[in-house]
Every structure is written in structure tokens, then in C-alpha cells.
Length: 316
Ligand code: NAD
Image 1 (tube, protein in one colour):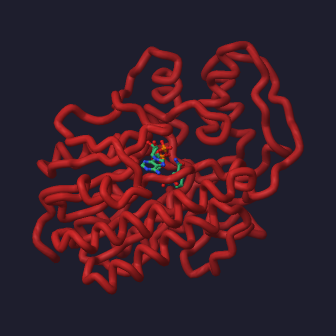
Image 2: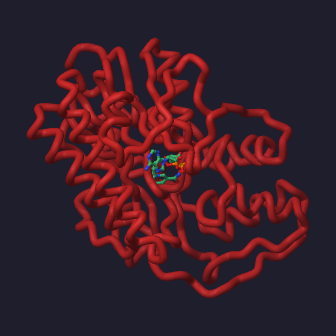
């Protein structure tokens, strides 16, 4: 195993997952610099002990400033909306592909960065014919521009890192939930449903609600990032999920029960670019990283709901 890492740069570290990752690294006595343009992320998410660079991954100078003195890069900054990635295909491709190339080149130029861990997505997989876990050996045939941009991110991460002598891991994250997830029309079905039910309005379900998802707690995802940093693994792309399927309707029912709501959902047409079945095979993560998800979805939901409605039992 390579020498321990001491200083991390987290792009997108003011966002949902990056903010949790920053806190975990600081707890492990790794110093943290966050690079975020605050387009979605919030300054309050950045821990006071972290250095903050308010900048853009598309700007080589901002990347160089953020990476100064760092030995590991966690690249999480992205435009993350799958559904909207058709409408914003140019903006998303620029951020997720050119932005990745820009930050990777800056990392290579530091001479100090030894490992890069990039956030990819289950969206790189095409649709799955059955509700079975998807292994990484499944050919990646993304059906959304977002998925296409994440496939490019994986390949840029591995190639540019290898040429520069840096180690690399790309993590294909499945549906991540947990405290601190921002409300937006595109991400965070738990946050969206909870807020709608609380407001007394009927949450929208796209299609029949029988689409299957693998909900993984943000703390388990953060463990995956840390294990990817600590392990000697390089050049690998690895799923991070739980392997446990939930339909969107099951999630709705769980939340409705939790909130004692009898408001039914409103079904509208299915949207292009969304997968029917997205369940992670996590065998590779277990084998290569020693990854083992600890959070049970059903048991975690009440805590997350409480946080969303302002009676936090969990916090950043
Ligand atoms: P998020 O939107 O909360 O965080 C992304 C952060 O990147 C935000 O703080 C945003 O301000 C920042 N950002 C965006 N464009 C930037 C730019 N050009 N320069 C600098 N900063 C920029 O999203 P998240 O849920 O925390 O996701 C983190 C990563 O994980 C993303 O790469 C996302 O694609 C990936 N991912 C997330 C999920 C999930 O379920 N949340 C699933 C699969 C993959």
C-alpha cells in the first residue's frame, strides 16, 4: 500500500456527498480543500476546518489553487440531473467532461497528487432487462447524456491518471440518500416525496412507480470513497450501492406511513433516460475495497425524514 494520504482536494465538496466526505476525512486527520462554484452546493456545508476555494473545475487556475499541496483528489463536482441532461446537454457535457479533463490535468501538473477517486454513476449502465444486480462487467451503454458524460469521466480519470503516474478509482454510485440532501426537482426522491406530503400535495411518480432502485446511505458511500483512497487498487471502476432493491412505490408507501399521510401519488408518463431496474452488484467493492454497507434503508428512513422536516436526529 502507498504511504498514507495527508491532504485531500474535494471538488464539489460543498454539495451533498462531498460535504459528508470532507467531514469524514477531517476526522481521519486528513486536511481538506474544497473546490466548489456554489452553483448547487452551499458554503454552510463546508466544514470550518477546511480550506475553501470558490471556483470552477473548468478554470485551470482555480483547480491549481485548490490542489496546491494535496496528495489525493476526490472529484465529485458535476451537474447531476439525469432527466434535465437532455435539455442541458451542452452545459452538462462541458461541466462533466471538459471539467473532469481540466481538473485531472491540473492534478497531474501538481506532481504531488498520487491518487484520484472520481464519482461516476449507475447511469452509465443501459437499461437492465430484469431486477437483478448489475455487475461492472455489464457493457456500459448509457441512455442519458448524463450517463454518457459519466462514462467519459471514468475513462478520462483512468487514462489521464495512468499517463501521469497517479492511481485512479472511479466509483459508480447508486441512489444516494441521507441528511443534507438538497431539494431539487431532479434528485433526491425521498426529499421530494417528504416535502410534498408535508405540504399536503400529491407527489409525482414518473411511470408506474415499479422502477427499481438501490438506495445507499451517504455514510456508506463516503466509506466507499475512503476505502478507494486507502486501498492499493488502481485503474478500477467499482459499483457502490447495497444490492437491495426498492421500488419507487415502496419508498412512497414507507414515507406516507412515516408521515401518517393518506395522500395518494400522482402518476405521470415515464421519462426518457431513466432506468427501469438499477440495482448494484457490490461483489467487486467487497472484494477489492472491503466495502460493506452498514445502513439498512427501511431503518434509516425515519431519521432522514426527521432531518428533512427540521427535527434533525442526524446532521452533517
Ligand atoms: P450535488 O449537486 O449536491 O454536489 C455537486 C457539487 O458540485 C455542488 O456543490 C455544485 O455546486 C458543485 N459544482 C457543480 N458544477 C461545478 C463546477 N463547474 N465547478 C465547481 N463546482 C461545481 O451532488 P451530489 O449528490 O453530492 O453528487 C456528487 C457526485 O456524485 C456527482 O458527481 C454526482 O454525479 C455523483 N452521483 C451522485 C448520486 C446521488 O444519488 N446523489 C448518484 C450517482 C452519482
